[in-house]
Image (cartoon, rainbow, N blue to C red; front, side, top):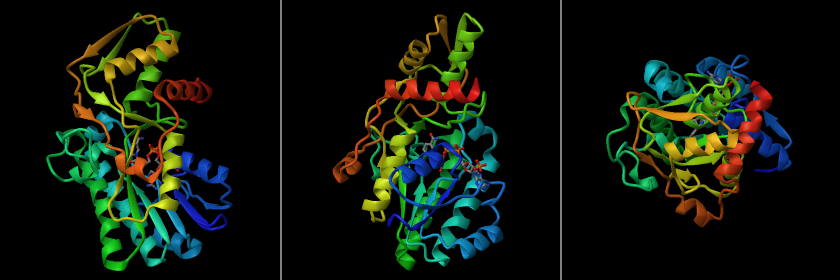
Length: 309
Ligand SMILES: NC(=O)c1ccc[n+]([C@@H]2O[C@H](COP(=O)([O-])OP(=O)(O)OC[C@H]3O[C@@H](n4cnc5c(N)ncnc54)[C@H](OP(=O)(O)O)[C@@H]3O)[C@@H](O)[C@H]2O)c1
């Protein structure tokens, strides 16, 4: 990307989009276009077409999506499939119509088959049954990846997809019911500490293994891939190490300084037993994460305190 190129970051107020926006600014990109969902509802085909016609962006980071944790995904199943398919279809198609030089689409590690071998290699997509709780979201995301591949093969559009692991970081969602596991734990431990609650209940058994990547690392990887990767095959972005939910909870508890007990509620769903990315392809290209989990949780907790307390 040329430093003065017009770059559209869709979803620039979200955790991923805001990190990409900041990273682009830091790297000296000067012509970044943004719209909030109020200014431009990406589910609206006509409005998206008008936006591309007027703005004619040269590069697009598609980080706008309906995103949520296990409960939100399972409860709002229709919204997750409809909104994500609408947003990505409109943006990807208009990027083609208006000859965008390159588009980056974000998938997610939770769209690999539920029982895929670990670590997850890019080749494992669509080799088995999906995790039922987030199947509508996964089907939408898979459609987005396949759209990018199809527009590349039929029209030669340089549309790439990336597959990030679980993310956390600045501007994360700390909603009591709709957030992902790591921000949800930060919030619960913080509130328990402040309110001197003797016990914190954690959903599931604590045994599932998860991998976490800090948002600014993801943004750096996305900008790196926009500049250095032009293949049809999507590419995993992660750290290549995982941790059990129980150990994650203990780490967050220690960082926050909560002194009470932990209780695991095994009536709540666990989700996929393990999700660890094979990041050998990304490492071979020359990119590796910088922020380890402990440092990242400290940074995220400070951001949570600054914005939510
Ligand atoms: N969070 C994770 O752990 C994770 C992991 C892997 C992949 N990803 C992927 O990363 C991408 C971004 O996720 P995120 O965590 O940054 O989500 P987020 O914080 O919830 O942000 C989503 C953004 O999408 C925008 N948006 C939603 N609906 C829209 C609509 N109808 N029209 C226009 N904009 C709309 C929102 O804009 P407004 O703020 O203006 O309303 C918001 O800024 C998603 O594709 C997700 O699948 C996330």
